[in-house]
Length: 450
Ligand SMILES: *[C@@H]1O[C@H](CO)[C@@H](O)[C@H](O)[C@H]1NC(C)=O
Ligand SMILES: *[C@@H]1O[C@H](CO)[C@@H](O)[C@H](O)[C@H]1NC(C)=O
Ligand SMILES: *[C@@H]1O[C@H](CO)[C@@H](O)[C@H](O)[C@H]1NC(C)=O
Ligand SMILES: *[C@@H]1O[C@H](CO)[C@@H](O)[C@H](O)[C@H]1NC(C)=O
Ligand SMILES: *[C@@H]1O[C@H](CO)[C@@H](O)[C@H](O)[C@H]1NC(C)=O
Image 1 (tube, protein in one colour):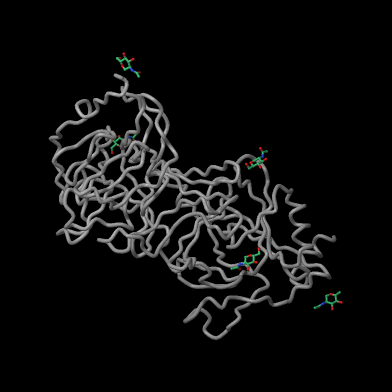
Image 2 (cartoon, rainbow, N blue to C red):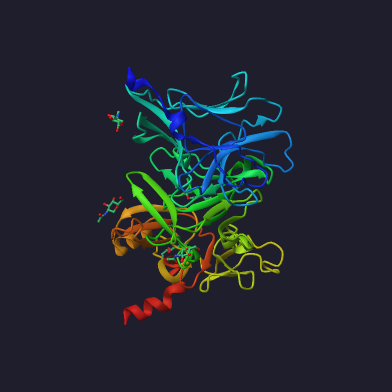
């Protein structure tokens, strides 16, 4: 009988004297929420290190008609929200007695004073065993978790975690992921609709489900692809060296079975860092410098015209120093020679000499390139096997070898269509072998013969 007696209220509820965030006045803060407690509008759940706080907030100031349940940094003004629970189901400001509660099955529910449910987290296929109950906690990382705990708050694994349901922000330790098996299990970030409206906006950033070698893609509504990083070569997303060569954060890509996931860590744990996708589709790493300086942009990942997928068309190369397009150095010429790229750049380039696959084409090596879009993966093959296989497949326009999994296995990556979205990236690119007519390669063949 005594095992079922719950004492969380007295043990874990205390009044905070910390100063409230501008626009949000918390009357009371708690460290965990048990099934017999409620978190009312105005109260907050805080992480043990006081870095993050969960509560009800108004996205607009002054507060207009709706409220949301979310997580923000506790001691930063103006309020910076990093996660929102009920993006699709806002709380009318006129609702009274709004509170959060956790049921016996680990589902947490936002309801009003008359117990009308406004939003609930998805069911979790959990029922507690004797002497155990679910508890809601906000961890130091900013991850909101439902855990299975005993009476002494000794807790087991996570029944649910907010890190698996990202909003518009990726915090250190949080993952973007894709399961190549189902392609449905997918974790991406989605922009807010407007600065003062956290409902789902038009922009999404996550792994690219339409290609085989892992790359990340920014899309807008209807899945139109705007900008991409990648493919991953074991160390970096091809062309994205800025993500590697900076003193503030480090990315990690992980492969397990069919799943690939990416997270980043702050190199100094005590700094505040976030990757956020703005309502206008800008993707930025921000760093909290100080009260006076606020959030500093340390990286903008889609900043110029060259970051737009295919901005120079097939076989075109984009140059961002002098925003313009040129054709691949050898064997290609602009399709529309009239003022190419003065007005419309995406028409791209064509071959000076046609390919003749049956007679036998060759390959020319280009170095330091951002690898093209729409890759296919042909598995572990030596570079020679990869070339031979690509040569026999007439639609194969290029190939390369990548230590994609970072474990030494050399993976053959090929492109079975015209090559699009190429760039020259000194220090951050990769080699690619591009199919060429043997007429173009004549000179190279001759050198090989003698
Ligand atoms: C809880 O802690 C008390 C005192 O330390 C201990 O006697 C009791 O066995 C613990 N209960 C459980 C379920 O671990
Ligand atoms: C980490 O950041 C904190 C706060 O900015 C600073 O005081 C500390 O010296 C840094 N530590 C390292 C190892 O750079
Ligand atoms: C391809 O090369 C073969 C052999 O040299 C030749 O017979 C054929 O006409 C060529 N095809 C084209 C489309 O040029
Ligand atoms: C991507 O490549 C596949 C073949 O691997 C092709 O069927 C598809 O049309 C290509 N998509 C684009 C947008 O080029
Ligand atoms: C490298 O990782 C891939 C994917 O997990 C796996 O298929 C492959 O066998 C691994 N290679 C080695 C040499 O361990």
